[in-house]
Length: 79
Image (spheres, rainbow, N blue to C red):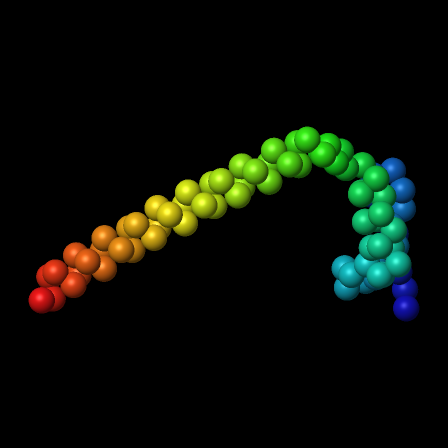
């Protein structure tokens, strides 16, 4: 099978004619990209998790209240 060579970010990437990249190439590129990521620290991760939990709880209470009120309204109209 013939393979073409493409230039990508300073290095040649082996690519098959149909546009798919081999699994080995893909995994090596994933590993290289993970090395470039700036991961959040412990304090930032805990803070973000706290915000997500609080906002999820508030939205759940809001949607529950709206559901309860609309259910009572529909029940009042149908009776």
